[in-house]
Image 1: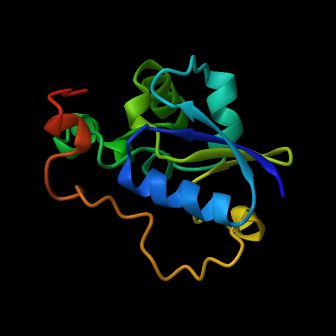
Image 2: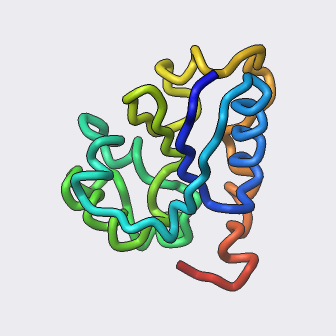
Length: 142
Protein backbone atom coordinates (compact mmCIF):
# COMPACT_ATOMS: atom_id res chain seq x y z
CA UNK A 1 0.00 0.00 0.00
CA UNK A 2 1.31 3.43 -0.96
CA UNK A 3 0.32 7.00 -0.26
CA UNK A 4 -0.46 8.58 -3.62
CA UNK A 5 -0.98 12.25 -4.44
CA UNK A 6 -3.41 12.40 -7.36
CA UNK A 7 -3.79 15.76 -9.13
CA UNK A 8 -7.20 15.72 -10.76
CA UNK A 9 -9.95 17.81 -12.24
CA UNK A 10 -12.78 17.09 -9.80
CA UNK A 11 -15.71 15.35 -11.45
CA UNK A 12 -13.71 14.07 -14.42
CA UNK A 13 -15.22 10.74 -15.47
CA UNK A 14 -11.90 9.09 -16.25
CA UNK A 15 -10.27 10.54 -13.13
CA UNK A 16 -12.97 8.87 -11.04
CA UNK A 17 -12.29 5.54 -12.75
CA UNK A 18 -8.53 5.94 -12.26
CA UNK A 19 -8.91 6.75 -8.57
CA UNK A 20 -11.15 3.70 -8.12
CA UNK A 21 -8.45 1.48 -9.63
CA UNK A 22 -5.80 2.85 -7.29
CA UNK A 23 -8.07 2.53 -4.25
CA UNK A 24 -9.01 -1.04 -5.21
CA UNK A 25 -5.28 -1.80 -5.23
CA UNK A 26 -5.22 -0.71 -1.59
CA UNK A 27 -3.58 2.69 -1.87
CA UNK A 28 -4.35 5.83 0.12
CA UNK A 29 -5.18 8.72 -2.20
CA UNK A 30 -4.69 12.38 -1.46
CA UNK A 31 -6.49 14.27 -4.21
CA UNK A 32 -5.60 17.80 -5.26
CA UNK A 33 -7.63 19.95 -7.63
CA UNK A 34 -5.24 20.50 -10.53
CA UNK A 35 -7.12 23.66 -11.53
CA UNK A 36 -6.78 25.32 -8.11
CA UNK A 37 -3.26 24.21 -7.27
CA UNK A 38 -0.64 26.97 -7.36
CA UNK A 39 1.61 25.68 -10.14
CA UNK A 40 5.01 27.03 -11.04
CA UNK A 41 7.31 26.00 -13.87
CA UNK A 42 9.69 24.04 -11.66
CA UNK A 43 6.94 21.93 -10.06
CA UNK A 44 5.26 21.21 -13.39
CA UNK A 45 8.56 20.38 -15.09
CA UNK A 46 9.09 17.63 -12.50
CA UNK A 47 6.20 15.80 -14.20
CA UNK A 48 6.78 16.67 -17.87
CA UNK A 49 10.53 17.10 -18.40
CA UNK A 50 11.80 15.42 -21.55
CA UNK A 51 8.38 15.18 -23.18
CA UNK A 52 6.98 17.04 -26.16
CA UNK A 53 4.15 19.58 -25.75
CA UNK A 54 1.80 17.32 -27.71
CA UNK A 55 2.36 14.63 -25.06
CA UNK A 56 1.80 16.84 -22.00
CA UNK A 57 -1.14 19.01 -22.97
CA UNK A 58 -4.81 18.18 -22.47
CA UNK A 59 -6.27 17.76 -25.93
CA UNK A 60 -9.82 18.15 -24.62
CA UNK A 61 -9.11 21.65 -23.27
CA UNK A 62 -11.39 24.06 -25.13
CA UNK A 63 -8.54 26.25 -26.45
CA UNK A 64 -6.80 23.19 -27.92
CA UNK A 65 -9.99 21.70 -29.36
CA UNK A 66 -10.71 25.06 -31.02
CA UNK A 67 -7.12 25.13 -32.35
CA UNK A 68 -6.44 28.44 -30.57
CA UNK A 69 -3.47 26.60 -29.05
CA UNK A 70 -1.61 24.09 -31.21
CA UNK A 71 0.72 22.00 -29.03
CA UNK A 72 2.75 20.81 -32.03
CA UNK A 73 3.87 24.39 -32.64
CA UNK A 74 5.06 25.07 -29.09
CA UNK A 75 8.38 24.61 -27.36
CA UNK A 76 8.39 22.81 -24.01
CA UNK A 77 9.02 26.12 -22.27
CA UNK A 78 6.06 27.77 -24.00
CA UNK A 79 3.79 24.83 -23.22
CA UNK A 80 4.76 24.78 -19.54
CA UNK A 81 4.25 28.55 -19.25
CA UNK A 82 0.77 28.19 -20.76
CA UNK A 83 -0.12 25.27 -18.48
CA UNK A 84 1.03 27.17 -15.37
CA UNK A 85 -1.14 30.11 -16.44
CA UNK A 86 -4.15 27.91 -17.28
CA UNK A 87 -4.01 24.44 -15.64
CA UNK A 88 -6.93 23.10 -17.72
CA UNK A 89 -4.22 22.68 -20.37
CA UNK A 90 -2.36 20.08 -18.26
CA UNK A 91 -2.86 16.49 -19.34
CA UNK A 92 -4.15 14.53 -16.37
CA UNK A 93 -3.63 12.87 -14.05
CA UNK A 94 -0.43 13.91 -12.38
CA UNK A 95 0.62 11.38 -9.75
CA UNK A 96 3.22 11.50 -7.00
CA UNK A 97 4.12 8.16 -5.45
CA UNK A 98 7.30 6.85 -3.85
CA UNK A 99 9.35 9.85 -5.04
CA UNK A 100 8.09 9.40 -8.63
CA UNK A 101 6.38 12.23 -10.45
CA UNK A 102 4.23 10.74 -13.20
CA UNK A 103 2.01 12.28 -15.85
CA UNK A 104 -0.62 10.06 -17.40
CA UNK A 105 -2.29 6.93 -16.12
CA UNK A 106 -0.62 4.62 -18.65
CA UNK A 107 2.94 5.59 -17.73
CA UNK A 108 4.78 2.26 -17.17
CA UNK A 109 6.13 3.53 -13.85
CA UNK A 110 2.56 3.52 -12.51
CA UNK A 111 1.93 -0.14 -13.48
CA UNK A 112 3.17 -1.61 -10.16
CA UNK A 113 0.50 0.42 -8.34
CA UNK A 114 -2.49 -0.69 -10.42
CA UNK A 115 -3.16 -3.95 -8.56
CA UNK A 116 -5.53 -6.38 -10.26
CA UNK A 117 -6.65 -3.94 -12.96
CA UNK A 118 -6.40 -5.73 -16.31
CA UNK A 119 -6.27 -2.59 -18.44
CA UNK A 120 -9.30 -3.59 -20.52
CA UNK A 121 -11.50 -0.67 -19.48
CA UNK A 122 -10.66 2.57 -21.28
CA UNK A 123 -9.89 5.04 -18.51
CA UNK A 124 -7.89 7.37 -20.75
CA UNK A 125 -10.01 8.47 -23.71
CA UNK A 126 -12.27 11.33 -22.72
CA UNK A 127 -15.90 10.51 -23.50
CA UNK A 128 -16.23 14.16 -24.58
CA UNK A 129 -13.28 14.14 -26.97
CA UNK A 130 -15.40 14.81 -30.04
CA UNK A 131 -18.16 16.77 -28.33
CA UNK A 132 -18.36 19.57 -25.80
CA UNK A 133 -15.84 19.18 -22.99
CA UNK A 134 -17.05 19.09 -19.39
CA UNK A 135 -15.99 22.71 -19.03
CA UNK A 136 -17.85 23.75 -22.16
CA UNK A 137 -20.96 21.89 -20.95
CA UNK A 138 -20.80 23.80 -17.65
CA UNK A 139 -20.32 27.12 -19.44
CA UNK A 140 -16.70 27.48 -18.38
CA UNK A 141 -14.98 28.14 -21.69
CA UNK A 142 -11.43 28.11 -20.34
